[in-house]
Length: 303
Image (cartoon, rainbow, N blue to C red; front, side, top):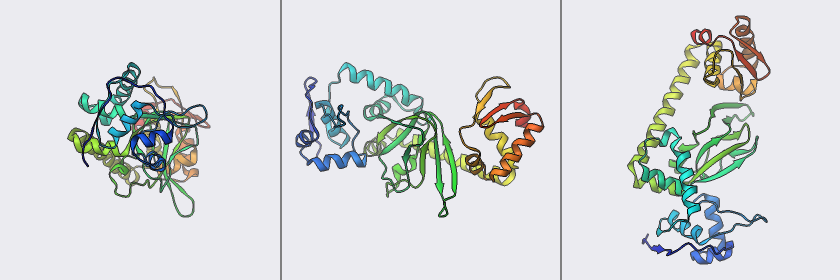
């Protein structure tokens, strides 16, 4: 692709509709909308009627995301927004060691997306829109068997990446479910832009490799626990993991139902319920519904 340089001498606040924006970009409206669906470009603001509303800065940003070289003098508002995005990205373990210029490029294309409890971030077969980073809330990752049984894979916590493996999969489609347990906010980095930056900056590629290595270690540890630890021991470990860093006796609320917890632990719902009864009988915890009071964290850790 020939690189074209676009320069904007000063911010232009003119508003464009989708048809006008497509004409400015030299493509059809359907092509522009397809780019949004495929995650090749970041979303733009919508007006009160729900229609997309473009500024000149949006158009130049879209050109940048498509690979053109663009110089955009940022407004104060955009600089503030990018600064906030950098702050959020720096909290993501995958990106903590990235150089400032690389983090800045990621911040330029980052956008927020809000979801309600029960909404899906993606389902199997969905085309990848980009890299998802959970900023607020909790997301449950799971798969289903042909007979409808669920297998919980993981519980994503704030500032974790979600479904990142699809970024480098040729099919560009998700193979698992990601559902919000509570109202959540997700940061999305467009697929094409992340791939482009990964090719341009080896530091970003190594950051993803480190994250993949960590995930593999987590899976190996989980397999080891399934093979060597009793269900009670696995339950104690997950409760300690969920617990905050407060003093002994702090109450926590389980983010999963008993059935979902059983799926995550690799046991039956009834077996997990009996394990809770035994741990409560031994004075290690007290449970009421989803609320669990950890009475003896050291005791749980010794199991």
